[in-house]
Length: 243
Ligand SMILES: NC(=O)c1ccc[n+]([C@@H]2O[C@H](COP(=O)([O-])OP(=O)(O)OC[C@H]3O[C@@H](n4cnc5c(N)ncnc54)[C@H](OP(=O)(O)O)[C@@H]3O)[C@@H](O)[C@H]2O)c1
Image: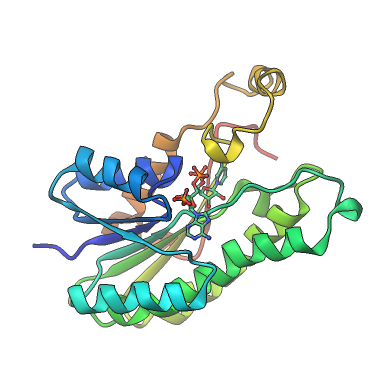
């Protein structure tokens, strides 16, 4: 049987869609998040191909314990998906305290680094190619909107990080891919007022938002040999206008 894919942030809207999509194509999935009830419900939906793990990935000891448990239970992972985010305060940059930047950097760069380093022994040197997919944001590749500096900067940081690691891990048999989604309706965007969102949608080329399923389809593709040449190239997955 194929080694499982670890999905970090599977209790979220996009991570959950990725888990369902990968399970549908026959992958075993390890569902990670902090909310156990969410993960158990998703595992119940997916069936025996799903296992559940919880950890706060901004906590070094919790992340280390997560990868120690995984190493005890599995000889390898076939993939790792990083789909983690915490909401940010939408304020002008000069009115944003450092604590907000700290929280975003911890949830993105620190968490990704702890997980990439922790997962490396389970991904490297396997008989078949293994993969890491980092969910970034289109804010990191185009012009980010105002009042997003803490989040956009943290996403820019993980995008640069993943591009470096994509080269370092190539010779170890690990492909690193980056997806850069447009705005998706999930809990992460739940604080955006409906009136603003309706106006935003009306101005999109297709008058519809990107969906979690759009992102999941691209992640499923990136998990195949057919996508190998895209390593390290941020892939915009978005129904927004191109800038
Ligand atoms: N939604 C969008 O418009 C959009 C657009 C572009 C990119 N993205 C990116 O897509 C990814 C998924 O976002 P989403 O919309 O699915 O958000 P979401 O529904 O809010 O899910 C976020 C996930 O991150 C987990 N998480 C947050 N802080 C954590 C921590 N300290 N330790 C461990 N897990 C933590 C959450 O776990 P618990 O809930 O269990 O705590 C949840 O599983 C993120 O990287 C986000 O930046 C989203």
